[in-house]
Image (cartoon, rainbow, N blue to C red):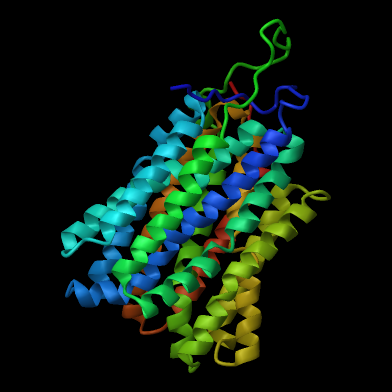
Length: 417
């Protein structure tokens, strides 16, 4: 089996078969499809299965939700090993294997009849997701694009994949209503198999390397050491920022519908408003990419995080009135998907790309833990305070922390020593 080799994308390789070539564009197009399908089937569809699973397995929704938390934590456990693999071998074999495993697990999920089997399948899905979803896709795109083109390539990927929830939650709901959750999982497994495995196996290729006759540039730096990264103040500022932001996103994403219903709105209104996050996340990514052509990426993203802080804090105040509630949700939703496009850009810019996947995997661990635990912590806060006001105030505070950490990053230089 031929393995992929990752090239630091900063190296001056060009031509029709070099970086930013037609092959690079094909890879972005393929990954846009596989990430949409992968997230839609392996991640977003779970919410639609929650009640049917609880009914058929005779379990509480809390117990069923716990399997999803286990899946997210399992994904975090593989973040660093997956990153090291990607840095050494690239994404083709790993993402193809992850997609095949994801398909097999969707099929297995359709056959479960006990809670422990659900947990086993969900943990497996978490491991498969670590190998074939965003972090792996970002590493491939970073390797195939020069710094000038990374932003537009990542934007193209995340804009398309941003519609995964809209497409697959609707499709999954329709299938469950027409058939049942087991048949629906079989259909999703077929879709996943047909659209992810072949694209990962046939389109992904090793990134181009300089011809053997060319000497390396005299000023080329050796690959950055992880010890230097972990001792860099900027890395921990990035970690703090994106972990805090992930916690805020997870909290609001899980509790918004319940909060709006508590504030007097109908379930239909609450679900419709929450559904805006998919479209708003795409809008936010477009705005971020446009503004960073004129301003520093850290400044743009910090400003969006600050806007989210205001919107989250305002929701308990204005959330009982429909129009102000929609406006506040829109303000928060603009930053819903900004972190996913900003993180790879900032990491690749601060640290050269030959260790990108390992560095990103290290940063992803606390982010994923925050994603898994923040909604549970928010639920406990709501129970103790008997109000969603405290939940959204804390979410706003997390966005303030995320914004402040990015602004501080502007003054934190990385020596690489």
